[in-house]
Length: 209
Image 1 (tube, one colour):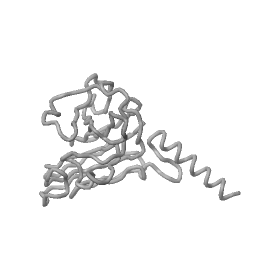
Image 2 (cartoon, helix red, strand yellow):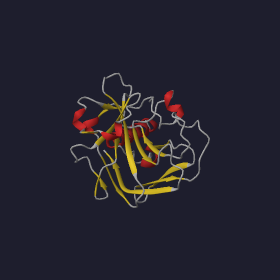
Image 3 (cartoon, one colour):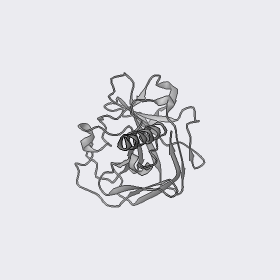
Image 4 (cartoon, helix red, strand yellow):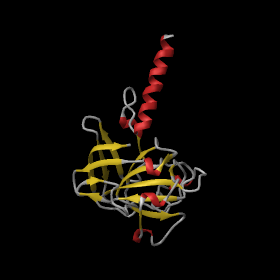
């Protein structure tokens, strides 16, 4: 009976954590982030102040780690707990403590088959705080590619019914194994597939909802 009670308590904590994007209690928030960084880059989580640290080292690498043949270093903090969440229900806040540019990728399914068909890119700031308030907040990557994606902005409501999904994805800037292995649907990123300089950024008061 005691073991059953302990199991039910753990199950409740995990359930509560998944609803908020944070897993507390026995499963702390740092366990919700997977390091999907490519080449000489990394991420780490500070439990004390709920800050996320991303670092991209300098130097070029042999091609092959990215789908598109990039030789750079890309830090990727990935969160899988928003699979099948409506895009309009998702929220994120953070404060950026230095100048290195951090951005958000969301893998979304617009057709209902639970396979990502778009990548939304969000890097708009109001001051130093990330906000969805901008009416045209998102850039978009069309699958498999849109050469002019970076010149077009969309509103979060331009994708009615779209959901965030953990999915394989075809995108030149994604890790090579994301073609065959599902990537978490929420990605916090520093650098890109061509980054060969040292970059570092810390996001404090980090929260996913």
